[in-house]
Image 1 (tube, rainbow, N blue to C red):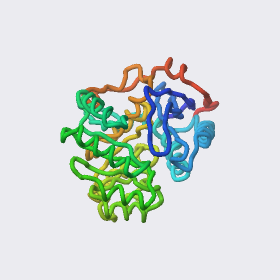
Image 2: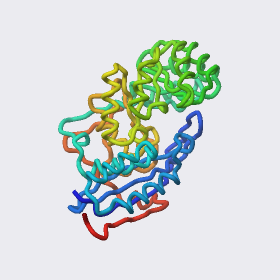
Image 3: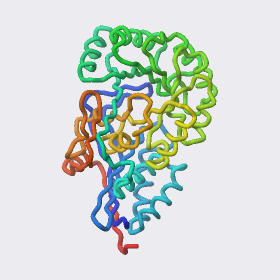
Image 4: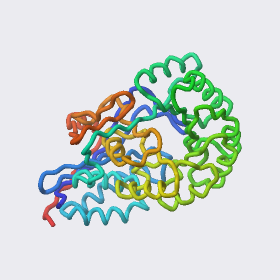
Length: 361
């Protein structure tokens, strides 16, 4: 298969409500979206949002990478494009993933094809910050079918611990609970938070310290009353091996854009599974394009609920046949295949770069 056209776009998608994590509050997502068109007319889509501070890449470097690679790779065979982009993953995983995901879709990678019904339970973040507001939010989300809740922490330890206790009281054992610090704590804060958690109903505590602070994360894990999950620390199979060697690190969280696309994600999850680590997959700041891809790829690997819930946060959906969601689950029927809503793409477009092969391979 020869790729005839590659279009690189950046979108701006306002959110239904602000999404607050330890290092910023999102009011919009600004993903880079890649469209690939094959010589036979087949179309594939990929994306990667590069939030400032979450990686060495930036939105601008990812944009320049995708545009440069698009100019270079149009007119080439899909296998050649895959081999080239795979070599670029270590230096630019987010941007490479946007292109590799589009390539996986245009070539109908077997991991994306749904031959039987697929139900992926999703976890849901708790937005409320006061006891009075937490109770009705919990009741509403339980009624919607959610059974795994995530509390974002990573600010002030005592306030974070109090909020977790309020959520536990509101849940009354009716659902599971996770916490995510998004690298927000230093070592002392992380240890104090983790050692003072009431483990009742808590599945795990995610990424207390900075991604490269392996010793700090390991020390937090040793004193934690609940298992730890590493997220931003996990970028390749070597990181998975290292995580598996740490006491009380029982889970790894992966995102396609961090490990570098479908094939690398499948290998990484298999490695984690072989080492006895629980697996969570998903990007909370992605659109339907990446959330669908990650839902498909997660088959057979998820330990608990998936985190591919980003598509529920923007006001606009990008699929003309929206990603099916019911009772707290992504539900993919046999044969489901996304169709892009091009009007939605156009109405949220901030920039675009088109590349067409002058001579086909």
